[in-house]
Image 1 (cartoon, rainbow, N blue to C red):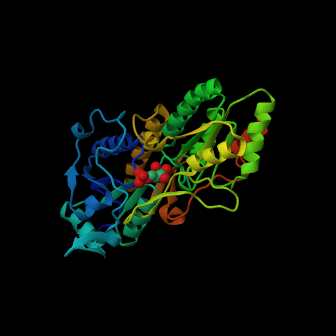
Image 2: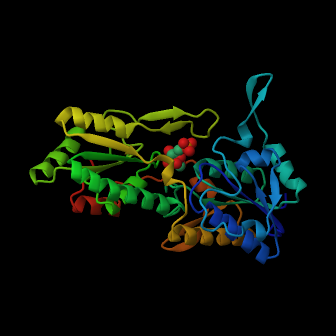
Image 3: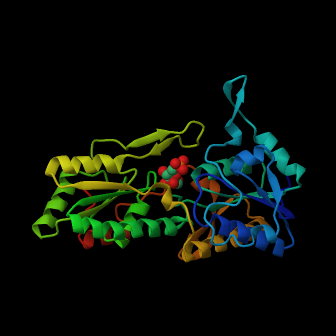
Amino acid sequence: MDRTNKVKSIAVLTGGGDAPGLNAVIRAVVRTGLGYGLKVWGVKNGFGGMVENQIIEMTGESVAGILPRGGTMLGTTNRDNPFRYLTVQNGEKVYSDMSGQALENLRQHDIDALIVIGGDGSLKIGAEFYQLGLPVVAVPKTIDNDIPGTERTFGFDTAVGVATDALDRLHTTAESHHRVMVLEVMGRYAGWIALHAGIAGGADCILIPEIPFSIDSVIDKIKERQQRGRLFSLIVMAEGAYPQGGEMSVGRIVEGSHEKIRLGGAGEKLTREIESLIGVESRCTVLGHVQRGGTPTAFDRVLSTRYGVAAVECLLAGAFGNMVALQKNEIIRVPIADIAGITHNVSLDDELLMAGRAIGISFGD
Ligand code: F6P
């Protein structure tokens, strides 16, 4: 494939778990590409669709009305990796390298370059294709906000909004029943959703994977509130949070996925422990995929649109192998190779974390 900047025909794909704003990026890519006179293709169902030749031509019509819609009109999967592609042969599961077939499918459509909208798994695959000579540009997607090189991934703001709304609702029922309410939120190995929602939703305790918690410290916080006449407490817990000396709570294993482990169950364990230790009636709410579904916030729609436009312009500038990113409210370019495979965690001196401590929130340490 030609790695000069004579890009005439581009494809876009969405990989990994969906995030609110995916459709807004696709729309921006298609509209910008068409505006520059390019031919624009959509690869359906992530990298699996690239192997299976599920490639459709995109027009202004195909992206009409999708801006506020959650999910992805192209479909996605967090299982398929063309470099280790799962097929069933004679009843046996076989993994083979189908990257050549995937590239051939792009060639057949005269596609010069690819925009990958994805999280860490998709970025890694995108980086491998780039190394094979395919001009690639990436857009950082995930509700977890755990991709390095960017201050924000799109989808995060919407997920934080959903979690904050849940905390507001839990607040009133917790107060009425004098209960401890634990809200388990997503985020994988990073505590960004818990941190931001916890601050926005007035949690008393925020537990994140970056700070293993002490159960005594959590109990102290609940008791301290009780002594002040506050007979209820709100705890927001990242799915990856775990007790000191303990382990993350694994919900299930998804074979064939880039990251097989799915976290889950931490909130329920903590809830039972609180009840058994101090006898306060407690309940756990697991927000789950509600955080990923539905309409993106205005912030995510704007960010997604900026990313989509910037990704096309990055390809036209011949700046291949980059991810578009947000730094100090400007869209910049970051080499994918510098960030693929790295998780962006909450640092212990994070400004928001310190603000939380300053206003008396317990982080369980
Ligand atoms: O990475 C996004 C995310 O929603 C994580 O927060 C969560 O751990 C995981 O994906 C859930 O994956 P699945 O959709 O496969 O259950």
